[in-house]
Image (cartoon, rainbow, N blue to C red; front, side, top):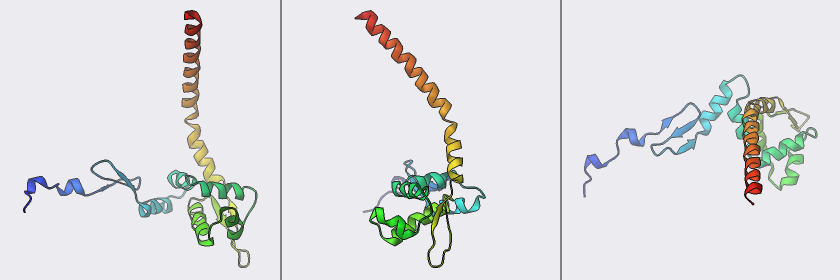
Length: 157
C-alpha cells in the first residue's frame, strides 16, 4: 500500500521550532521543555535568570530545602532526614538550587554544607511586585461589584 505524498505532512509540519525560551514549539502548539537550552541560557547570563529561579522554586521539595536553609547552613545528610530521600536525590535538588543561585556550597573538611542565598529570590519578588497593582485593582473592582450585588439583593428583597 502506498500513501500519496500530498497526504503526508511536510517537513515544516513535523520539525519542531526552538524558541528563545528553551521550549520547543510543535505544530499542534505543544510545548516541550528543553533542559539543555535552559542550562545554556542560565549559564550565559551574568545575573540570576528568572526562568531558572522560578523553575527551581517550582518544586515543593526544593522550597522546603530553602525553608530549612533559612534557619542556617546544613549538610546533605541534614537535609535528607525529613524527606526520607537518598543522598544523591537531595544532591540533585541542591544542584538545581545552586545553578539558580539560590544556595551556595562551602567546603568544610569532607562536608559541603549548603547556605541560603536570597538575592535571586529578591529579583523574583521584584518581578512579581509589578503584578500587585493589577491584583489590587482587580480586588477593588470585585469589592465594588459585591457591594452593588448586596444593595440589589436588599433593595429587591
